[in-house]
Length: 76
Image 1 (cartoon, rainbow, N blue to C red):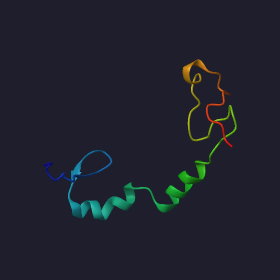
Image 2 (tube, rainbow, N blue to C red; image 1 turned 45 degrees about the vertical axis):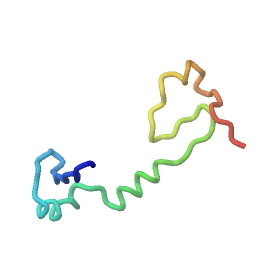
Image 3 (cartoon, rainbow, N blue to C red; image 1 turned 135 degrees about the vertical axis):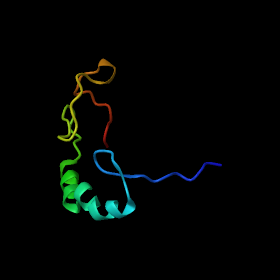
Image 4 (cartoon, one colour; image 1 turned 180 degrees about the vertical axis):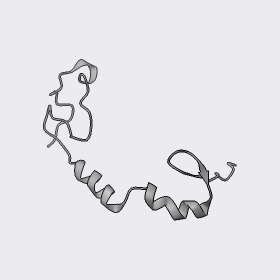
């Protein structure tokens, strides 16, 4: 049987803090609804061969040395 996990509250710098301080300051540290909406707006799907989504870095080369425009997945 696994023991119950211990919940530690910390600052962004890693300082262990009380639950009361966490509740007072978490809104300053955690993403807001607007932040989450902005990230979601960046994550538009890209299905055109050879194109990369703007929110990921393009690899230096394709999988198994395949060209970047290789059709790994066929739609339809």
